Each structure stands twice: as structure tokens, then as C-alpha cells.
Length: 368
Image (tube, rainbow, N blue to C red; front, side):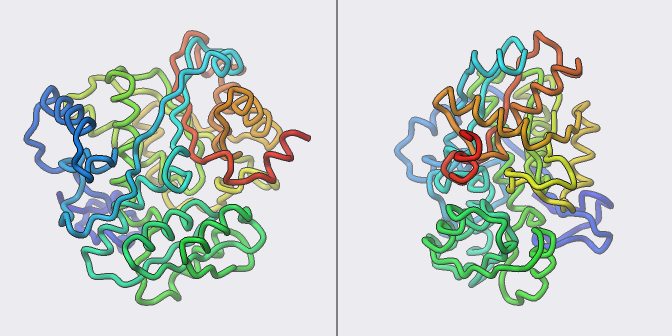
């Protein structure tokens, strides 16, 4: 696999921006398995007692950048449930809906799928420390994987804008938390001061490689049947980029022959929101997300806090639960169905990105 800039296609470092400002991206290498062989290999690895294949990410090892086995840091991430939801379908006004719950991960968010690859790459490169800017989930995940690897971890977070639960996770796993006055964007700007630590935000191409595995997990759970729509919450917009990459590759490999449409749901601009995980004003993967929306005939929709909390309450009443940002996916489907952008007979997967216990204050707000 080689790395190139996603904007100008020039050779690039996987760890930093290109000189043109574009993000680095791995190209899929030569995979010597046909679609049937690849599906069979995945089934066999799920049933294996090999410790590495307890991970839904590393079961796809041939589709990931080469990292020596002794450098791999895993917490058995990527075993993601897909919950069919008749109640969610009724709430959104569509024929069929399922939740892909990435919050059911070791640290409670989708970040674990990318972090296992990013921290493994850090170990392989000889790094002694990792750093990120975060609204909570990235730093919690980074801290856990860094602790597992024996690396120092530094988390730059916006003061007063991260839930106590997420701060508690970071500290529990031994990260050094640096609170920055301002927003996530202000915290991200401070990364340049952290010399000697590898950045593991989604500008790191290894992160996207791990996160793309969520798309494969969804397809495998559906028997490789492609849904009509996938709805994703959007913050820094690395996750839509990762899903799009995984889906493109799945078609390139012959695992699927069509692509779904994508609905990107973001928090309304210029207002306070309980969905702090997606309250990012200057997303670093914006241009890559715009490409994904073009390629997948997608729609971007901004959702207000009342709609997010109403959707969160609906998901909770099913016994599933999620953090507020996750509920934007269901709320967005409902809004897009109401305006006719999504058809009533649609088959939809709503991606939930974080666990319900990530922000208990928002839970209390939803009940009120």
C-alpha cells in the first residue's frame, strides 16, 4: 500500500498534511483473494481462537497497511452489533431501519477502530508518545490504547466542553489532560506545540484505515446486502471519509456491486448543543467529506438540539441507548424523510457512534 495526498495525489507521509493542505490517504494494495475467498476468510477468522482475530479490525489485515505483528495493539475492537429496529423505523418513517452501534466498543466509541491501527503504527515507528485534540472520545480511546502499548498520551481538550465521563476515562487510562480555553478548533491548533508526540487525530491516515472497517462490519452483518441509505453523525468528518473509503474498496474488491446513499448529519451551527462530540466548527476532513457526498449522492443536514435529544430518547426507549451526537443519525433520517429526501420504502442503517454512558448529563436533559 502507498500513501498519497487525497487532494493533489502527490506522495505523502501518513502522519501529516500534504504541503497543499490535503490529507494523506492509503491506497488499497494488491489483495490476492477473490470475493468468495475473502468472505470465507472472514468467517473462518471469526470462529478462530487466534487472539489477533478477536478484533473485527485485524480480521481484515490484508486490507490494512502492513504493520509487524509484534507492534499491533488491540483490545478486541470492531465486533459491532447491528440492531434491527422496528420502533426506529416507525419513528423515522421508513420501512426498515437498523442501528450499527459503534459505541459498543472497548472504550465506548467508534474511535477504537481507528485507534488500534494508529497506535500500532506509532509503536512500529518507534514513537514514545501520542497526542490528540479531542471533544472526548478520541482522547479516551487514545489513552486506552497508549496505556496498552506503554506509550505516554497527551489529550488537548476544550475547557468546560467535555463530559465528566469522558474526562474520567482519559485520566483512568493515564493520559495527561491539557484543558484549552475555547473550542475543539482551538485545542487542535495547540497540537503544533506538542513536539515529539505522534498526532493520532484523523489527519493520521492510519486512523481512517481502522475506521473503514466499520463499513465492512456493516456489510458482513447484512450478508453483503447494501442498504439504500447510511446515516452518519458528523463532527471532524473523518468517519464519513472512512465509511466512504471502506465502501469504495468493498466494491473494488467485488464484495458488493452497488453503493448506498449517505446522509451526513451535523449539529446546527452557531448554537449550543448537547451533542458536543460533533460540535466542531472547522472540520479537518471537510474536503474529503464533500468528495464522499458527491460520490455517494449524499445529503448533508444540520439538526437542532431538540431534534437530537428527541431522537436520543426514542433510541433509549428501545433499550439501546447512545450519546447525544449518535442520535443525530436517527433524528436526521426523520427530518430527511419528512421533507421527502428519503423515500418511505427505504432500507436505512443509522450509525451510532458513542455509548449512552459517555454523557449522563445529556441523559438527564433528555428526561427533563
